[in-house]
Length: 79
Image (cartoon, rainbow, N blue to C red; front, side, top):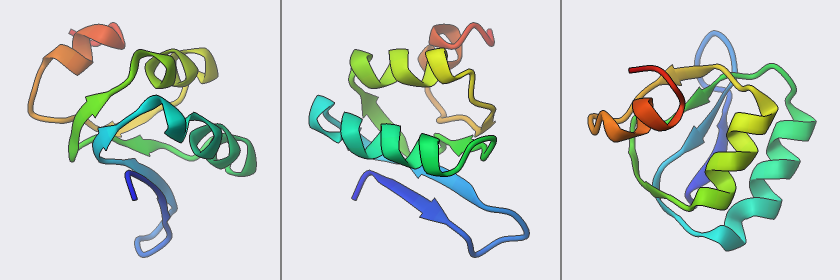
């Protein structure tokens, strides 16, 4: 499952990992609505469909961890 809520640490984090296709958009939107203000961890992300990228940008989420590929930092304006 590419999108999950991780409550194992001191505070919850939404993890987006692997290859995340557009049909995961409903799940991501629900996760963001149910957990406002919870940071998003992209450290294990391989591919994010642009629809989901736009959703994360519109929600102005805090990215707590970045993937190794610096391309994603550029997409979020964190170069």
